[in-house]
Image (cartoon, rainbow, N blue to C red; front, side, top):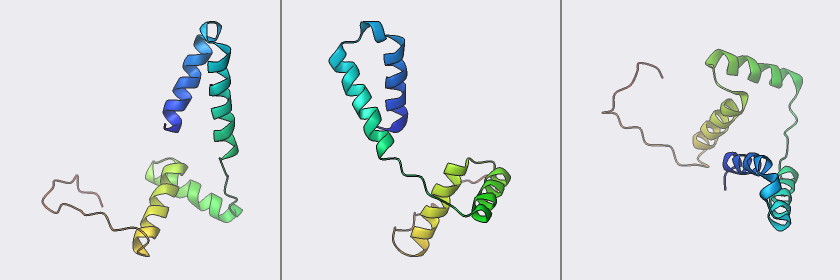
Length: 96
């Protein structure tokens, strides 16, 4: 289950809390607690944080999306992940 689908399930449960059984509510709350426990924030130096925020704004992507892009490209560059194949015959919008 993805985070978004789980968040939607929690929202739905909140809308119908009077109709939910106690065991179902306990399951949802325990899963939410588990997800929160497993979320680990990464401490970044202020200069790194500022650079990420500036680049994300310039690229018009979220900070989280930028971190995923940078991390994926670093893993590909250093051969920890296979490089994604690019179809050279496909149409592009002129951006790299």
